[in-house]
Amino acid sequence: MSDDMTAPWLQLSLEALNHTPEQLEDALLQVGALAVTLADAGDQPVLEPAPGETPLWAHTCVTGLFDAQTDIEVVKRQLQCFLHAPILPECRLSQLEERDWVRAWMDDFHPMRFGERLWICPTTQNPPDPAAINIRLDPGLAFGTGTHPTTALCLEWLDGAALAGQTVLDYGCGSGILAIAAAKLGAQRVWAVDIDPQALLASDDNADENGVENCVELALPAELPATLHVDVLVANILAGVLTRLAPEFAQRVKPGGRLVLSGILEQHADAVQAAFTHSFIFEPVRRREDWVLLEGVRR
Image (cartoon, rainbow, N blue to C red; front, side, top):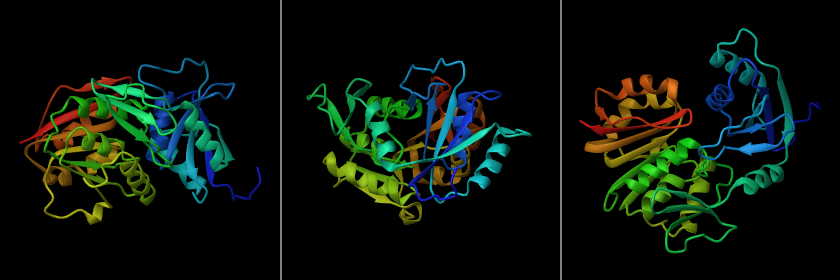
């Protein structure tokens, strides 16, 4: 491969041989991949497999998408640590033009229903049920279309929640999908927070597209008011980050308020819950594929 890294994105691909695709996916996200795709030996992509679907290929290639300025050698060393691997699986590095990435998710993104009332629809297609609560979504370069099990779990929870008049904090908002869903499901005020300015731009555009820009407040974590306390806090981010944020989340949720945590592989659920048990009483775990959602009530 050429040393010229002028393409907008870098792809780092690993074959799932001694590790499961889910382990490689989680490791890539932990080390900063903006998105992860799965492909078979024929290189047919499946972007964030739909709920209930699991790739059945004999050999699965897992590919992480990184900014072109990423130091891939550092990423490889971090992957080796996360995977507890003496030798990292063989990696393949390639460049990806932005137009190819946009086309890839557009081809895979179709209207989807979550719970009883909620539909997520790409801006390029008409909603199947115009009378439903429809979210028109263009995720841009930020994570969150609803197709990943963790996002689906959160959307289904929101659909079943009584949000009318509530204040909601979406921590790690990505495309803004959860914040917008909360607003359209009746929340009075929603804070959408992310460390990535690109995510806040995508969330802003999507809030405008869905007519909820007046009740969705966008912010970097450091910009949140110290006095902000909410009825519901939703965080669909990585398990290690959730654990580190436990003290702040406890401070942000009102007594009797709800905490909804996802982005958690099943084997990490106990450790994440343990970090929050001092401040929250947890409901039974919700599962989808290898992922879980934890719901707690503030003591």
